[in-house]
Image (cartoon, rainbow, N blue to C red; front, side):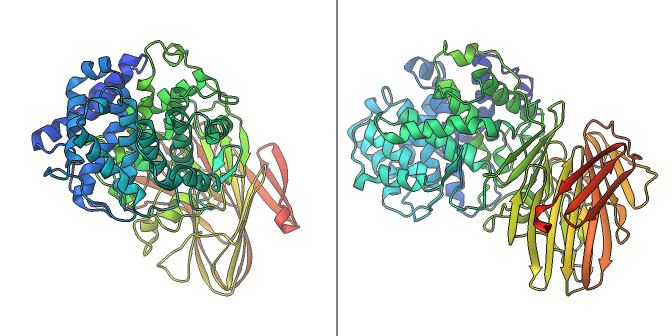
Length: 617
């Protein structure tokens, strides 16, 4: 193992010095490579591709490092203390913005990837302006201004990208440069149009609510409230108010050891999951129902558990992947330097040494056992000990990015078992259909939910109506009874259908468990027990083996699943699914579920509950 990996793994993250050392250990391999390559402002970490070209991929990694180095070097004394990194960073900036340099970052196009990277550069320049910008020659200042100003001259997507232009123009205002056409207020007005309520936004796409709300819309809005020189701008107060409201529901995306929910796109950014807590601390945000100690706990524990995972390459770079290096799960915009977006967590290094954040005692938050959130279209269920989170969702949708059906539209996502993305649709093992229902007319080309006709999150279940074909209609109800959940599918089909429905997948390091229940199978792994019981007669249970490198956490998995065939007609399918990290549940416990009109009665052992499925009324 690379020595930098080991140092990060052993770092206790207790003090500011620990935190600074973690950043250095993360960036040292990159900066050593840049020095070896003699390419200031560019670093060629690897040769895997992205939707943008190789020069932009090499610039991206460097510029993302500035999210950390700007805060680290935010005073002259700190810049001197970390002189080697500060000088390499500033040399890269000057070379990259100089049109006469062979390392010039170039003229940019509409929708250019490097507009994204301007956010880190603008933040770096604001934090270091008194001793970096102020000491530049007029020509160097002009070069930086002209390169950054391209974001005001080109088209960018109407999403969180608007904040990169806001940050660039905030830097211009800070150093007395003109901002064209009241651009900041125009962009802020557009950002307002994405706001929902209770701290929640959507990010350009109404049906896609993911971590971009936390590490994008909220992060940049709260950051703007601190960095903007226009302290009377009304958006400062509104961003802080929204961030304060957002803290409590976002807290529930985490579990006690700091692990956050794997869900949605851009999970290659890993511990950026907790970056909201960093920017909240940096800006002194007065959060509702979340203390500074709790925010610190979530930030640091999220990073600690990430540092224990095999997320580094042998050379010491952050890899593309999630729980391990894995190109299969990536989006088209995930380049070798992309994971360094997680450096946004280091914004707290800009705080003074005596800031209350560094003195605050870490405080574990309490998590509700079940929480309905209509804005994220989720029903969040925590275990009693707070160590596991299962999130049930309906109505999320992403049509533009890789594996959208897997990353947004499975029935349930777990902090312990993760979820899988398909390699192909041809065979079931390629589809890795955990936590979803897959259907096909043949033995091949299975498909899952991809867009709902109707959906609803309730206090005790989720509902979605989907139509894979015009003459096939499926009403799906998912009812959590942790660590179990019940699924009800009401199918009206004019076609014959092959059915495959998966439970949680688990690492392939365990053994099958036996049960006295017919049509069931269970698998006990190192992280817990998963399983499935068919509560109707037309499906059978079996253990499947998905293709390797499909699960977000585990390179090789086993999947308890149901399979069967339905002729054209109307059907009610009922089944029970287990995801139990504690491994304390008796898989022989009798389970029953009966549906009468709109009343679902569930019996697990001696416990019984009744749920009204209002969509059937």
